[in-house]
Length: 330
Image 1: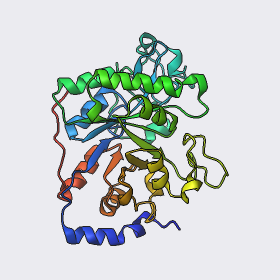
Image 2: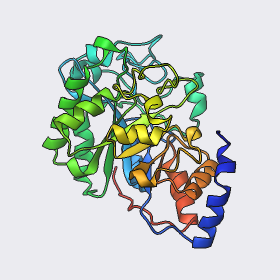
Image 3: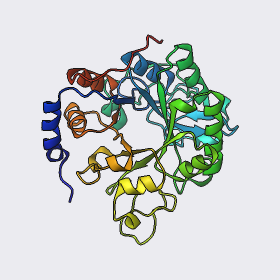
């Protein structure tokens, strides 16, 4: 039976206060770099997160028509933050990332939120910029390398769905291209691959088993990826059926051989959080409220993905938790 997160953590919070500051490392992940503060999934956003001081840069990827791995959350150019070469915001959904070459993608500006949009209203602290192009994954790796930030990790999400078809790369192509990029950059030990569509995770396990994999989930409600009680495995989970594991998402994730489970934070419950025996790390997403962050820290999660790494870092400092090194990158 599910209860509110506040009720879940009461006992855990008391235990944390008794034990004092947490001694273990905590994964502070900047979502899409630092979406609350700078244009999402851009080099300025990743630089902002590094200046604040994060453990991990969380990001999303797609592939261009000429097979370059690029950083973008959306499979199509998003009119809420994309301007065409003439400087005007797109009036509707733009072309698919996969339909454009890298040179064509670079002509669009993704540095501002469209005034009056609900997206802009959601992130009033985001700094608007001009001349900001969709970056490649290689450009991000180079930014971090040039800053000598060899402690920074990368949590990379493959953006595809069971129905995206030709609008995204197929799972095998996607996994192979990403594995090649990570290996070429010599970053295998500092990268994790995550996805809601576990087909890329299964492919990655075969192609590059040395790269850590993270299973993303939404359990019920809008965007549900588990589809409990439907008699067959969800199309999102690559043949793994949560009902075959007595409804336990951690057991499902362990069966898929992911090292970490990244649930929508509202989905955490006392039962679902009992993951220690399975050896999973639990890193919920996307948490922006300080009170909710505090509850999750008290619960004992291994990290948090947030649009506001500055808020989480400040809270970690208040809790006496070890802080990752900040990097003076521009």
